[in-house]
Image (tube, rainbow, N blue to C red):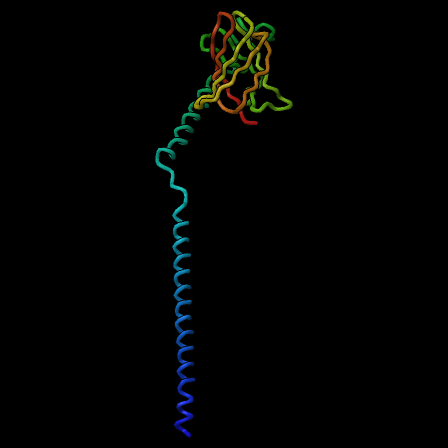
Length: 200
């Protein structure tokens, strides 16, 4: 009886062992798949980390510094161009006393003067609501129209302003703060002045 029971039990134990082996193999495969998946995620993470933007080259990092230096030099030259003192004798008409000190910028050729109404920060970009960009232009030989071709120093930015009535009182608004070189032309005459516009 014992031998028969053992014989009957052996197939069952063999079946159980096969089933266990299948589960063990399946579990091993499952764990192996998890390991491969983890490795794949780690690789993907590393590759995405390498996609960071490149560092600036010395040339690109030096460019803003050189631009800033040029702009600073332009600002200094622009500030030096502004004079606070008596106007030229030919530009004093209407001022009392005639030799009253006024902030002004002389043209390079000495043929025109831009008279401002404040010793500092007289011109703003954009213009202030209660303080417009007033410039009184006085020329040795008045002419009309007066065309202003302005260039923002140390940049490539330009602007053009037309004054149909020529020299005299005007409002000259420019699009950005900085030191501007104003190339002035009227019939038969050319000159230039430098004026600084401050940010509003």
